[in-house]
Length: 571
Image (cartoon, rainbow, N blue to C red):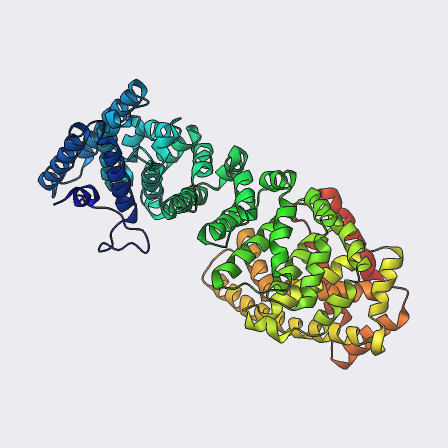
C-alpha cells in the first residue's frame, strides 16, 4: 500500500445516520481531498524532516485502522459516548496547545489534527442517539466544538496546512441538528439547541461562511450544510429567527443572493432560508428593509420580467424571492420602500409580459395595495396605467396560468382583491378613472363581476351544505360546538370560495354607491335576472364586517365596520 492509498483510506466509523442522497458505496470526496492536501504537505516537509513527521503520521494512520477494527461491533451506549466526548476534549486541548506552541511549524501539530479529525468523525454516531445529547452539554463538548468554529488561525478552516477543517465540524453539527433526529427526543434537542444558541452559533456559522470559497466544491458543500443547520434549528424553534437575522445572517443572505455568480443550489437554499426568516416576523421584515433588502429582491426578480426560469430549481428560487417580498410588504414601512424602488412598475411589466412571473407579480401587488397602508401604492398603480393591465386579467383568467399549476380561484382572488383595494383607497381623479372602467363597453365588467358572483355563491352554498351536515352529525353524537370548531368551519368556508365572494360583493356595493346610476341599475338587473337577492349580498357583507380584524386595532375595526354598514344602507 503506497502513501497515497494510506492517506486516502478511511476506517469504518460505525453506525451513522444517512442524509438523503447518501450512498454507502460512494467514496466521500472530502476525505479524498484531505488526503491529497496532506500528501502535498508531507511532500513539502520532506526536505525539512525526511523521516520524522511522515513516518509518524503514516504509523498513526495504520494504528487507527487497527483500533477501529478492534472496536468494530462494540455497542454504543452512554458510557461509550462519554468516553468519546472526553477523548474529543483531550485531543482538542492538545491540538490547541501545540498550535500555540508551534504556530509556524504545521508539521509539529499535524498528528494532533489527525487525532482530532478522527474523533470528530466518530462523534457522528451520537446523532443516532438524541436522548444522549445532554452529555454533549454536560461534558462541555458543545462549547469546545463552537470554539473550534471560532478558531483564529484560518488554516484550521482550510485544506492548506491542516487536516481539520470547518467542513467536518459543520457536517457533525448538521447531523446533530437533523430535524427528524431532534423530534425523536424533544428533551435532548431542547438542551442541545439552548447550548448552541447560548454560544452564538449562528454568528459563528456566518463568520465561517464568509471564509469559505464556494468555487471549491467541498467548501460549497460546507455552505450548504451550514444553511441546513440554520434551517433545522429554525424549524424546531421558530422564535430564533429574529436572533439569527440580527447575528449577521440576514446581511449574509442578501449579499449571497445578489452575488454575480451562476445560479446554484446554494443560491436556491439562501432564498428558502430568507423566506423562512421573514414569515410572521415584523422584526426581520424591518431589518431587511433597513438593509435595502427590498431593492435586492426587486433586482433579482427583474431578471424574470422577460425570461422564464431555465430550470425547475430556478423557478423555485424565483417563487421563494416573491414569497419573501410578499412577507416584507406586510410591514407598512416596506411598502414605502417598495414604492420608491419602483416595485409597482416592475410588477406591472411582469403582468404585461405574460411570463411565469405574472402569477406571483399579482400576489405581490395584492400584498402591496391591501388595507389603508396601501393607499399610496393604489394611487401610483393608477398613475402608471395599471388599470389597463389588471382589468383584462379580471375579464378572463389566462390559459397559461393553468399550465404552471395555479388554480383559477387563486388568480381571481388576487385580481378581485387588487380592485377592491383600489375602490377602498382611491380618491378624487384616480377613483373616477377606476369607476369609469366599469361603464366601458356597455358595462361588460359589471357583467363579469356578476358572473363571478354567482359562480362563487354556488361554491359557497355547496360548502355550507356539507358543513351543516357535519354539524348535525356532531350534535347527534353529543359533541359541543365551541368557538374553536366554529372558527375552523369558517376557515373552511373561506377556502371554499367565501373570501372571493366577499370581495366580489364588496366591489358590487362600492360601485353601486358611486354617483354613476347605471352601475347600480346593472347590478340589480342581473341579480333579478339570475334569481339573486340583495338580502344575500347584505348577509355576506355583514358577515364580512363582523370578522374584520386580523390584528388591526379596535379603532380601525369599528370605523371599517361602520363604513361597510353605511355602504349597505344605500345598496
